[in-house]
Length: 65
Image 1: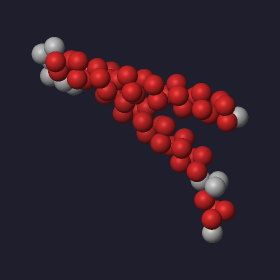
Image 2: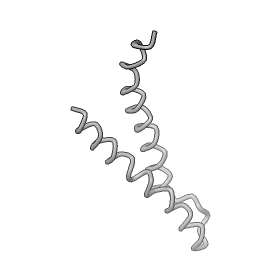
Image 3: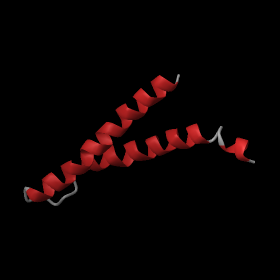
Image 4: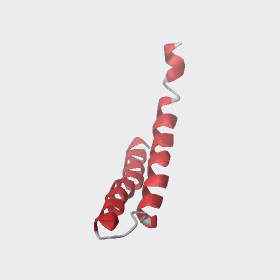
């Protein structure tokens, strides 16, 4: 289960990391810097990864109370 979660998180996180430079590359080539695919990848990938991390931390927190 945990190996699958790590693999799934990596699969979701990697396109987000790759999407951010696409915006800068578009801007450097004279574009307006709003590369839609790159922004979409980063905008969906990072919140999904944050949700996976929060879901993983959620069962641990009651042990500290």
